[in-house]
Length: 257
Image (cartoon, rainbow, N blue to C red; front, side, top):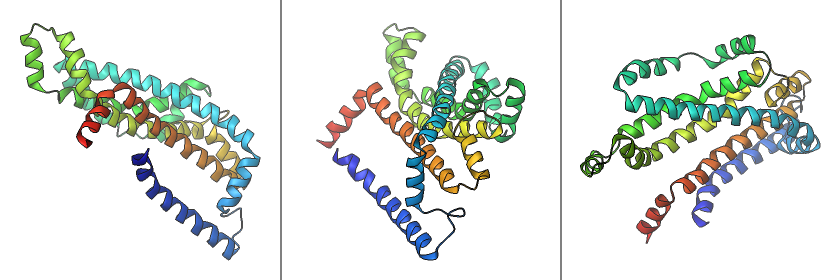
């Protein structure tokens, strides 16, 4: 608990100073709330409109989680294929890198045109946004496996699949979770891009509607909810890592003692 508190108090202190300065400036300067609402007004109006915000958060969260689940499965499939086949690695990896030069902002409207305003195009945008960091880090983790451990298992008669399961997958996990944390922060942003391109519901479409109504306070409230979603998902990756890799925590405790 103490290490968590030590890591949290510096950013919380900075956030408090920024919000305090923002509140003082808006109050002292008498800024029009349609231009720049105060943090207090954002919180107040966000609370008063909490049901609308919640109703718009659910579609965005659904798009984020389903799109990321598809990205997760595709990243594992491609990374394993790249690891098992040198021909696939030579043929596919350059294409994966090149795909990152295509702007998602340009792709999202095309997906809306092809697949309509339903859930599928939003999922695909999230998948395209988050896939590469997952696949690239996982492939790098497989490639960084300790060669001595591989030789030891093979000398004991372990086949390629068993060696992959017992050595290459565990050694790739730190790389995978590093990529997971990068990707998960992009997932909500990907969903927002898709909603801006065309949607029936979601935080992105809600922000557009409130901007058109000059409700800047509710735009900020929706931004705060979006940030909270991203932070929650980012934090969940650490919890998942502790569950999947319990030996890492034990190793850290041994070193600390």
